[in-house]
Amino acid sequence: MVLLLIAIGAGIIGALFGLGGGIVFIPVLTILFQQDATTAAAASLVGIVATSTGSATGYVKKGLSNIRLGMLMEITTTIGAITGAIIAGYLENWILLIIFSMVMLYSGFKMAISPEKNITECDAKGDLVFRYSDAASGVEDQPYAVKNCKSGMVLCTIAGAVSSMTGVGGGSIKVPLMNIHMNIPVKVASATSSYMIGITAFSGAIIYFIQGAISYQIATAVAIGAYIGAVIGTRISAKVNAKAIKRYMSVVFFFIAATMLLKAGGYM
Image (cartoon, helix red, strand yellow):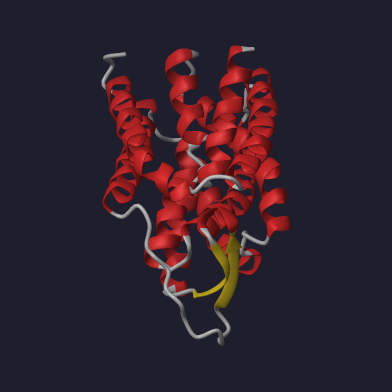
């Protein structure tokens, strides 16, 4: 029941910021429930699939998720996810914890230095020009042009691999990547990431299932809580300006990174 309640909170955070909830699942499972990094990553990926299922539907209906771009980027992301899950089976527990910490430090740094790239008006024509609306931010049918698509796809391979290896979901890399590198509005990036991470996490979870690394009792509690939280988080997202909240997420990322480094060093 404790894990179920925590998973609800993780689902809310995951849906709001397109992170999948893995930033909460991994520390909780490894520190509070004393699970090894591989078991925690496997259960986290199951929770991320549930978070994506609960949040993506709402975002797609509202037109925030960029389905076309998400499916394009998911090609390379899935390849990375399968590769990362296979590699994780051969790595020591402390190595996975350090990799997770590095991802948190990177994401925290990016959010602290560049909370959001302001998307300006652009020519409303072109194959990679899309439109979005966000009532909470006062945006109505604003066009934006996707940039650096090819390099973004390459970087998504890395995001997919890190996602499966650590169970973090890849959203902590994809959201800053899409906003800062690819010129995608942060609300659209978060919504598209929520849509993508379910596919990525499912690919990695299948490998962990084959390897017998999934604890069904833990995964069930995580999945149910994450789905409930994701539905709630999607509704909250429609009423708040996520840009303001994102500035404070970097502090959370730094705290989690420090905690996991202490865990890897045997101090916790």
